[in-house]
Image 1 (cartoon, helix red, strand yellow):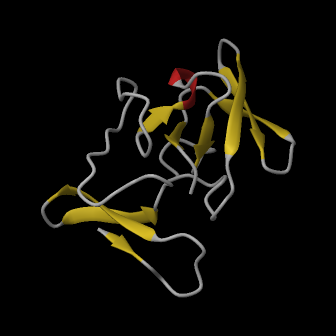
Image 2 (tube, helix red, strand yellow):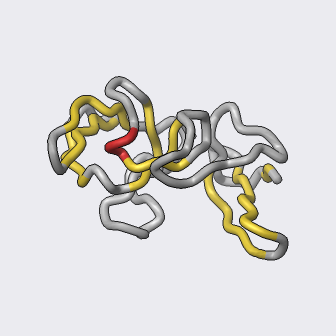
Image 3 (tube, helix red, strand yellow):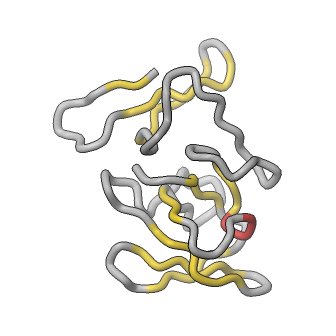
Length: 116
């Protein structure tokens, strides 16, 4: 379900895990009603899916990046903001934000593929 909320630049998407259980999140550009969203390290690289940063190829634009496991994403959440995966190391992934400053994030932290 996609909803417009006054005061927000991007619509909200209601993501339902099972009937009666779900959450609201910024809609990713290109998502649609009844789209299936996959979460986890084996999720395909498709718009809206949630993957660990270490599983996302360099040069890919991501949003809603976690700083700590399970924090729901703290970086690149607003309309038009995103990060670009620029490099991977053994334990970290380097992401360049819209402010052009690189950020080093643990490779297991989740993010969403696409732009809000």
